[in-house]
Image (cartoon, rainbow, N blue to C red; front, side, top):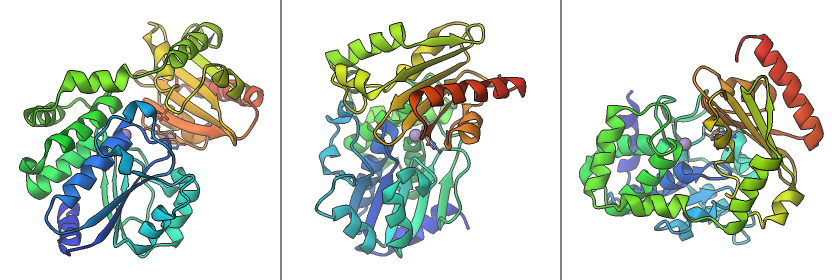
Length: 340
Ligand code: 5GP
Ligand code: MN
């Protein structure tokens, strides 16, 4: 059957307990789509109780978003709200990711501690099996756009309030790099027009998200580009690395390294950019590319990750030096196979 009709049927039962969960290191799209979907579900007049759960803290440049303080942050949650909500849930929505493997410890709860129907709404490549209803479209520029599309099909755009519009706009804007990446379809711009009609203040949203950083972040960025960016393969590949000690020097907060990996792609010859960021248990890798170069493939093949064709991520459990050495040999193989 068609997933919209399946979903409509699932939502018809009144007074359900619903959980919305988004991916680890939740970004503008994960948070925006979750907040919007929650408001749409609570506003549909069926008395649903909706809990939004994120695996860990969202970046501080999203602090201003309406309703964000009510997200349940699983990591360090002493109250057990997330655990109980998952145990009791009738429906669980998985937003902006497509495999519980991306949730770390929270993922285990979502497999073993629930009898809920599971609904996927996501735009990443290679979705996992095991969902009851699937909205998966790798050609959608953001999960927020998918949520918009689902709202339109279920209830019509008339139910989109100004706060729903603001949340969806944040997701669309951040995941498309300000409407500059792939999949900028006429439908996307039509949806933006509908959001604009609710009266959202687009320059203010832009300002809140992109001009809300600290001095430390600006200086860390300068340091990363000036001192830590290495260029390989005739100016076609760049990588940067940041150790915990280096980040501490600049009062690092989660979210501060957001966007760093994009910057080398402002160099005309550049096709592939990577950043390695040291965390307590592992090194997180972010990858970006231009055009044909497939970083989803690279992330899956070499770094236990994935994502999109031009933006992907993964992890390494080696030291930074070993990770970089492994990156270089992987890259040489990737190039030898004609992928770059
Ligand atoms: P970012 O570099 O901004 O963290 O992630 C880029 C894209 O790749 C995002 O869409 C993100 O969801 C996805 N991604 C990041 N890390 C992973 C990972 O470890 N596994 C998978 N499957 N996707 C990832
Ligand atoms: Mn997304």
